[in-house]
Length: 168
Image 1: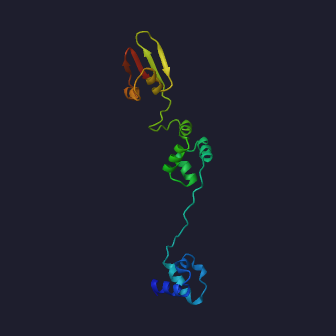
Image 2: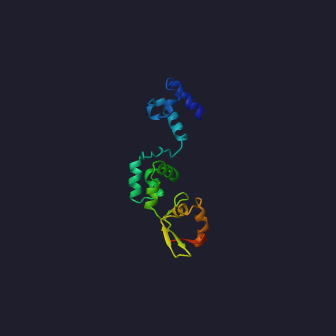
Image 3: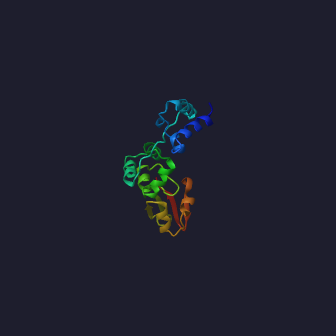
């Protein structure tokens, strides 16, 4: 017996079902069709599994997981979604800042960890400390990212009598 003969035998007996009868072969109870049913069942893949359903992740679920200090990878394992999907959902729900507060050593390109900026006036000795590089840049009228580039790698930058250094 080949697959064509087996399919035709079943379709001849159950013309109203069409190919829907092949989704659940246990519905076929005729004794003379059992050989065709066994043949078709043997042709199917051996390890047929249902796809794993991912749980619905709402904002509160993700927020609670982030507060428990789950990483993106851990959240992905727990929910059954990919890591990139979790990153997109966290960003979409506005939880990105919370995630990076809970994981201060993970610093993406868009969010800077709290790098303090120490500004020292060379002539007067006046010292100003800012909580971030961008705030220091705005206070002194630099364009965005200017001080970041100038002080990268522990370098010191001097302009208009002010020395700019990254703090620890």
